[in-house]
Length: 101
Image (cartoon, rainbow, N blue to C red):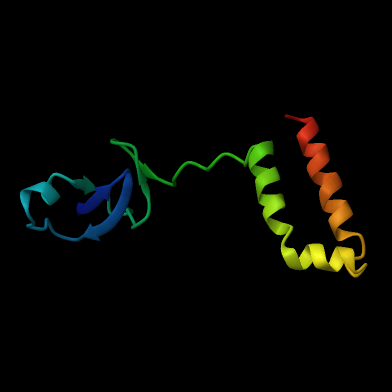
């Protein structure tokens, strides 16, 4: 038995057992789907499946993420000598990543 899927931005948003009747603009986003289809699956125009994996963050993105971890509280702990070397280790890690840019 065929199901119907509402596909928006290449992602299955909703699955229907019978063909729904919606506004024509929404019906243009309804496609026939196999019984195994589930919400949140990827649809490439022909096949349903898992969404492609996102690429790992670049070195620059990782640097920005690490810099956000250096909060005023972390800085205060470093100044007071209570961070146990955390800030120095984080800065060294960032410096290593910058060499890769």
